Length: 292
Ligand SMILES: NC(=O)c1ccc[n+]([C@@H]2O[C@H](COP(=O)([O-])OP(=O)(O)OC[C@H]3O[C@@H](n4cnc5c(N)ncnc54)[C@H](O)[C@@H]3O)[C@@H](O)[C@H]2O)c1
Image (cartoon, rainbow, N blue to C red):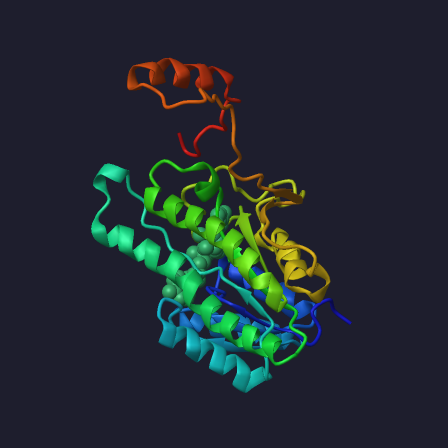
């Protein structure tokens, strides 16, 4: 018995890193897994690992950045397993440069994979699940989106990536508000782990402990939260963005209105400077911008 028995999950970018860890963990809890990745060999190898442990999985190499690709992924899942209950939007790329050196192509590539990639599959599945709910079927579906500390706090040298990840956090809030009525929960995740994406930039910080102690940065440490969010048991949790690393799980507390001043009438531009300085003096010090 697993907490995801009789559920099918599509995981994008699951050929390596965090996506691979999620795929193995979902399979271990009884889910059938669609291992999507543009890197066909990597996806096949994760499927082989799952099958070798007695799990059920198929590989899929369609591109998440087009509606045709998204429909093909869902069709493959339905053909293999009959239904889909969980989508983990995980695939990602980085094109890091200081903002002043960022090219249009760097901007578009990151927006396409992260933001449009999050839209296409979720849109195809949300339509399917909405139609099922309208037909009177019991829908208990999950969308798990991937933001980042960079999207929540900013990250120097990653303006494109931070903007896309902030967009994903906001997308999560709106999807949760709109899709709850159909039995779909939507949560976001800001993970931290040692993967292909982070192993060079954070090599020193994310080392495997030499004393054999708890490997805090192992990507498998993030997977239990994602698997639970994908299970039927998490029905009451939606619209949250979780930060997860090692054994830590926290809820990102979001943007909220801070110090405020109300003149009760329109400001004169010459008065505004003093008013803003007064507000800044009352602001709780911000967390340092990542990478600065
Ligand atoms: N590792 C971290 O500490 C960290 C921190 C914050 C956010 N994230 C996010 O977590 C997610 C997973 O990252 P990771 O660290 O495992 O990186 P990774 O590079 O190891 O894995 C990303 C995977 O996505 C795949 N991919 C890229 N474009 C794709 C596309 N168009 N269609 C299908 N697959 C595609 C890649 O082939 C790769 O296998 C990403 O969204 C990343 O931004 C990671």
